[in-house]
Length: 282
Image (cartoon, rainbow, N blue to C red; front, side, top):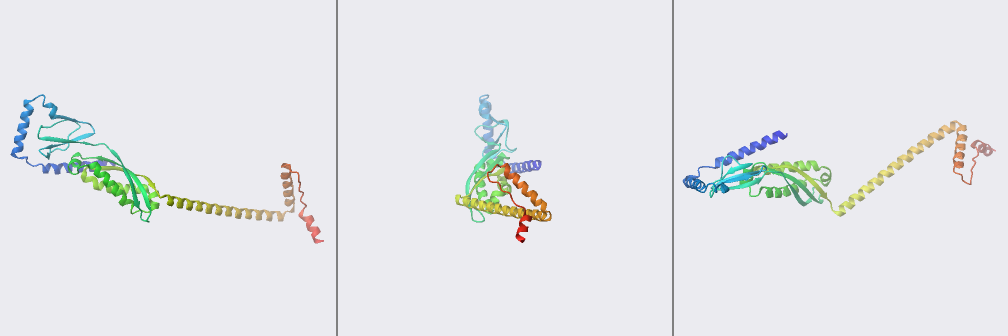
């Protein structure tokens, strides 16, 4: 996928350079005269003229050269040294590094009519210096404004629950839309991340109350299920003891042993049920 993206960027860059090359027609007779005059000035003031004709751009920069207002064919120059003619050439440097931009918090009305504040961060870089210089006045600022608008448009079609749980899908959708819009500007949107979703205070309290009530309901259900299981266990134990009267006596003795271990002052000695049943018959 990364190789395909790089190939696509190279194709777009080549197309942009071809378009600008086609636009660079003949500069005319006056243009050639001015070029010849410029070369004469360079020769007359050599080597002092080298200070004006030789320029340097860094590894992460590219220079777009304009000659008499037209972009020179061959695309942007750099990195390293390049040559310009005095008086008739001008150049603009473009930073090709990836830049990070924080999208300001946007007040957004979601699809279910809930107002939330969402902020995001985007990572952008210029892949074609010529397109970024010629096609738009400020590529980075234009991308920033477009990112704020796209954020509002994308989140306005989502439910509040989706904003909280489906951030990756929202960021991916936003990246695709931004990438398509900024491609003619020579700008590549590398990544989009949703930083934070801030809910109104009243909505936070309502959600907290709803979550608390849900937890209490689940706790009551668990307690009721425990009571039901305990009742079934007691019933099964009672059925077993009814089959063997000696088991009841052993249970009495076990209870007395437990009471004696606690060293209480009151000792209860239960009478066997069989003896009580005999007196009750009389």
